[in-house]
Image (tube, rainbow, N blue to C red; front, side):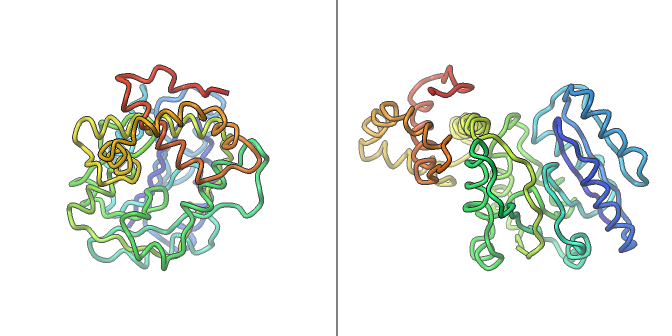
Length: 307
């Protein structure tokens, strides 16, 4: 018995639900599918997703207000009626006819199962390359590599979790915007001693996101990271960016690094939005931006780029 939970915001999920429903009924699995939109206002998308309610054992719910990414997941957990929960992001595509069956076979014991994420092999258009490059080279990893460092390489976008674990360790409600809700959850799971097993059962990340939008999302997520650090929710050693930031500060190089980041920020953005974005420069950009917002009390232009 399994509850399949799909948090969404302004995204068409009917095709994903139909695929999951077909697999569940074929395998004669006792299941429910709940899709919950976090207060979006796009009537065309909402009306499209309402068709989910016509499918047996499937529900499409709409939050009256936006409660944030973490709380939307927590709300879904409370509504789930079965002991095992499969979290799938709304922009995932099922690429395996035995996808659900593969997860069902691992529904034993008190552990988390991550199936992995892959990306389309075909290059997207120039304006969409940054997200594709990052996903393909950082998020897509073999089972062997993921199991070597199970907590570092786990995401919640394709993950099977016992409901009892999720009730004891909910997603951090402090995180309302994009970024780091997955990482904080995994850190909390690690501290609680729950084992994460990685299997070869991936979904395809099927959303083409413009590089400009993705860069702005990262700026938002880094503001989340600063908030978590400021509130002592996250230790600086728990994250590579905060670790490097503290190291730069310790060896008195932070201001020098920040000076050069500000000087070359525009050129870095040109590269990241180009047809050949460098992930190394993306790492430099993220560290530089974190130095920038950590030096100022408030970053006033987090929703804009220099170019």
